[in-house]
Each structure stands twice: as structure tokens, then as C-alpha cells.
Length: 158
Image 1: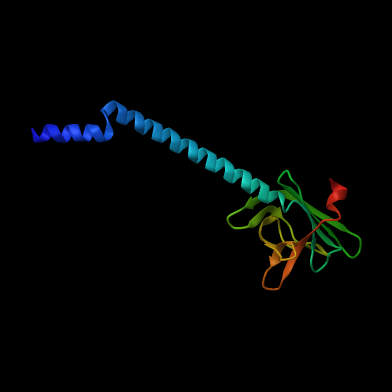
Image 2: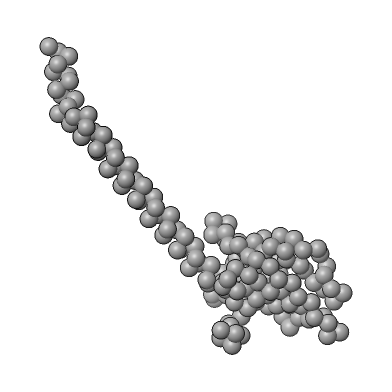
């Protein structure tokens, strides 16, 4: 008799086996729906964040010689004008890491007056936003060397 009472009590709490299974299915569907929404919102937020740094940058030590153009299609161009009027250029893809607040530039080449100073490789640059709203791509945080986003050229290239 006691076993029968426990069985009735469990059924009263959870319903029959069929209704318990239906609840599990509904719960699972709801959980899957919430995860899907969360992931799509994170991707949208990441995409919006990445659009803030799209544009033209100049190197802090030689702003008239060294420029970086970050495009909306996940590509970039890096141009360097040497003192003897030679021009060097490299192109590649970039990937934004929202968690690390950095950009990975693939096949990036650093230049000097003699041409490429490094072979093409990956360059990870931290993004720094100053209190004045300047967006910097850090080259050397210790020495405060960076590429700074400029806005007056952006409107001309759009």
C-alpha cells in the first residue's frame, strides 16, 4: 500500500510518463531556442564592434609614410612610402577577436626604407580606445607606438 501511495504522489508531482516526456521535449526546445538567440545576438554585437575600427590608420612614428587601410570585407592594405619615393604594399585578411579585443592581420609585412623588414606573417594588434575616442592599433604598448585611426580620409574613400 505504501508503494502505491508513493507512485501516486510522484504522478501528482510530475504527471504521467507521457506528460513528463512532453515537458522534457518542451524544455529542450526552449533551451535550444534560447541558445540560438544568444549566439546570433553575440555575432551581431561582434559584427557591430568590428565596424568601429574599419577605416584608415597612420603609424604614430611616421604618419606620412606608413598607412593601414582596414576594409569592411575583412581585408586590409598596408602601404609604405619610402623616403626615396619607392612604394611598398602588402594585402591580406583580418580577423576580429572580441574577447581579446585584438585584430589578427594575416600575411602582414612590416616595411622600412629598404622594403619588407619581416617576412609575411601573423600580426596580432590590441585595440586601444582613448578617453578622447581615438582608436589605436597597438604596435608596441611599452613604447606607446601604434597605428591611429583617422577620420578625414574615411569619408573620401566611401
